[in-house]
Length: 387
Image (cartoon, rainbow, N blue to C red):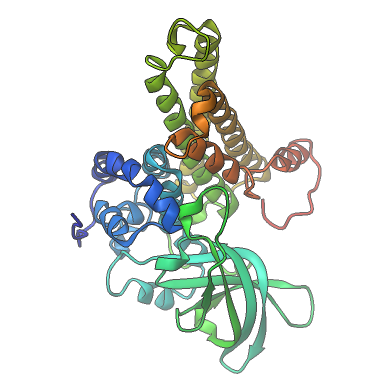
């Protein structure tokens, strides 16, 4: 049954309790989510009712205003049930932070009718913004706009065409201005609706744009003081950890009755399985401990309004990339332990495997993250405007 979202802010503890209670229903809909290539509307409404999309939004705008580590636990819990749902909530609850440099009146207007506003977008600068009277003429095509099928607003990052050095400028579009293309036919995270979208010669008012590397934030909130790459990398890592925990739970639950071919006893009695299970459990717990230690550090730094040094960002990004790599190894181990049965579509392990390897492709957590982080820690310059 679809419930109605509350109209007042709640606590993050209440949100986490609600998503945990909803978890079995989410897991039961995993195949439906994947086949739909998006979160079905009735399930989306149930998720909205938990408050999970408003965890990071400030209380001034009807949100929960949760601390970062607590918000990550919400994403982790949902990803334990289904990775596509966890990813969708992760994007829906955090993407608004990319718009925190819009003029305050513009930002406030987005939430004039309530806090449950869905914003999709793409950070890759795949558009061109040409200054015109009163705004910018924008054209472009962007990919990986997760949650675009149910978005209320959609934004694209652009290269501003003007004299001098290129400037990154985000432009926010109404749904009438942007065309969402049905392109999300993929092997993992299939239910995230991460389609392409395009705009052609749309004049966007200046107040619906911001220079993301130059403009100051117009919200005085800790969450928007965290550099976006670090903030989103930590979220992606929490989502990966939840997926890996789900895979371990899947194989552990099956091991007591699963009889491997030519084995006289159940998988749970196999010394090889026992060794791999203990090793995976330890690796996952260690990666999780580092991730949440890093999230606590990021939140304390943001609350103190202390600038994020390159070294701190290197540690945050490395912790996130490490968590994702560890999660991928853990899921792969669980999948292999499942034997031939892991191949079947009704087995959640095959979906966990495809989902986690889709996560590893994200530019914020791929292996070269360590190269850039290591260069910073070694005192070298990197050719990235924001890390």
